[in-house]
Image (cartoon, rainbow, N blue to C red):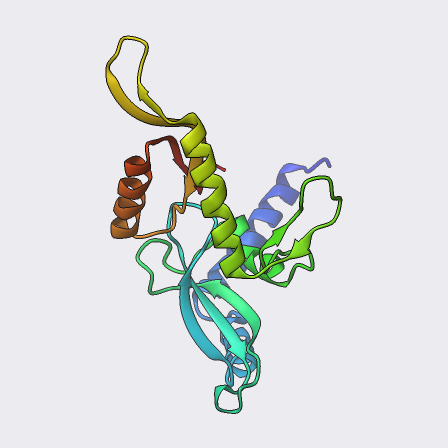
Length: 195
């Protein structure tokens, strides 16, 4: 696109005039705010944290459903929390797409297991899942725990299992996680922040 000097000044003047009018208060934000308030007027607001990384951005989750009548809550809107000191209402692209993650038909909501030799996943209870994980961890630790290295120094390591901790957890939960995992001898410990 070729602009001569006069056309360039016209485009710049139009842009500056439009932004000046918006700064003086002649913008549609008040109307948009009224629509937003009307849409969420009957919704229940819940504060939470974005699950994606270790930044800890706050989100506001709006749900509909009558708690007194045991109606199932349905998430209708998610936005950044303006009162959160970390993100002050803004969200990154992943956080802005939280609604897509929550409503995804591929989202896993229950523990499932695929038995050896099978090609199908079957749903199991949370108690069964925790028992199964504990049994596998115990068997692996008993088989691969290293008490001493080749020089005879006591190391008490469990090198065949890793642990992925939550990066959105509080300092206290992170401290307890590290203490628990290290007491088992696990040396491979990381958080989801790098995923």
